[in-house]
Image (cartoon, rainbow, N blue to C red; front, side, top):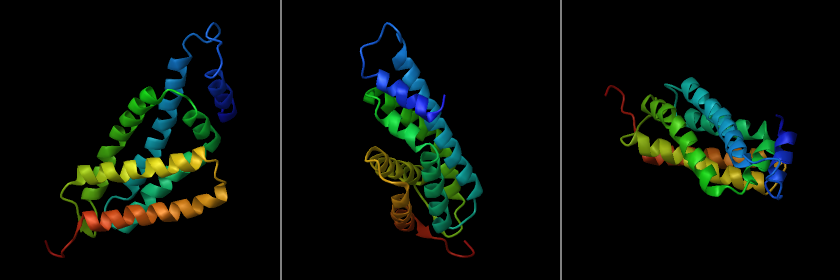
Length: 173
């Protein structure tokens, strides 16, 4: 189904038409899971492309991939955030975060200019730091022209964090 169809499906969640859609909660969770899987795939791909790069390039690639995954289906994202199944969506989100963590951690351990002692913790923060601001932008209905500002701010956030969380890589060690 396309994003417009998802919007229609999400509206059903607010109606009392269970006789027509008895398993709509399962349907909604499957849609959320599919959406998050597509986002996670793009982030994992960016991590693979960033292996051995600088922390700056890693931050830029991960931020860009996550935002592109949301922008390409912004109406779908907006509709999915409107589904009132918070606890279940949180579980699906946690699964998606866990699916991306190994790729981000692997990317960080290959960093050309920094060493991350607690790469798993750093990877977790990088991923979760992207989720809240992007969700806020989507649910607020921000126009796409403002996404460049968001991308720049998220890059600064993630790169700043990566700069502080890791130690400079000393040549020859």
